[in-house]
Image (tube, rainbow, N blue to C red; front, top):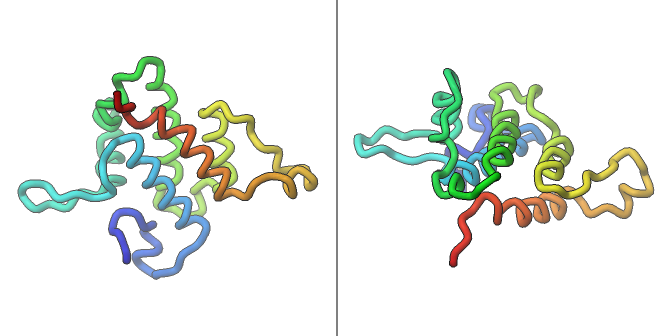
Length: 153
């Protein structure tokens, strides 16, 4: 099943996936978390809006808080973290695959935001003992979700 709005442009055009296209899709996921919107939606007049294009259009001229989910803005002292996650997401969804960060870079940036001590990827013995990138991302998302999603009382 293919979900429009989540795939990198080069995947839609060529149907070839890569690490860069995975980074793009992860960027869309981060945009969903920060904005509280789905990857695409249809307006009342039938126009299909892609989340990536909508956010890029809003931010093209100047910063607007409209991008961030209003529920998230209720949390004090969290706007800076949300803006940082938004910036990471925007870097992930750039149209040029070669300009997207590698997933290891994304993980390190998210670790910094969440307060998790960054992993030292340069030491082989540490790499063997470290959890794989998927489990690190799961841990990061678990830590970030309480920050980026409303708490039910």
